[in-house]
Image (cartoon, rainbow, N blue to C red):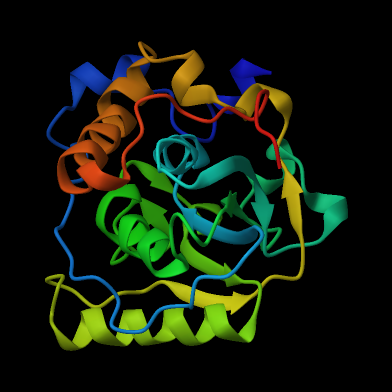
Length: 230
């Protein structure tokens, strides 16, 4: 299982130290809060984000207060191609994604968007994220409602107008037609493998940035898939 995984989120164990300049970790960007957001409502809500290897994206959202679960998986393609080996071909339409379940009274959809664009990934990189290449690593938001679509589109426009990034945002916003959980060995990978070279170099800085930039939204104990209550 793990051997096949190294073909996707790159086998950085050897590359990491031989070419550190080419594979530098992404820097976080301090961003304004969305000017438009969903109203707080009772119950739980889900949001699906794609931003490169799902290990790091999942790890970030697992440390956000109000998030009750964050599951790595696949979105954008059909159920019959939703397996890691197939998605890694880059021909399925799927993106490595994370389904975030959250309490809107504790954290808003807009706040999750702010964290996604600021900390979880670089939204100006087309069909790649850091060292990972392919459409399966694209930046995407799969919206579950018209309200989510409205908020997401408005926030992208807000950030582009403010020139928050040196290049235009390439994040694609589309409807959520289906989400397919990834294999068990991908779940909670960051927490379970904190010394794995790829995680150390690419993803642990994201957790540090979350704590630094969003201290009021950071929780030290991550909510794990194996322990989540949704």
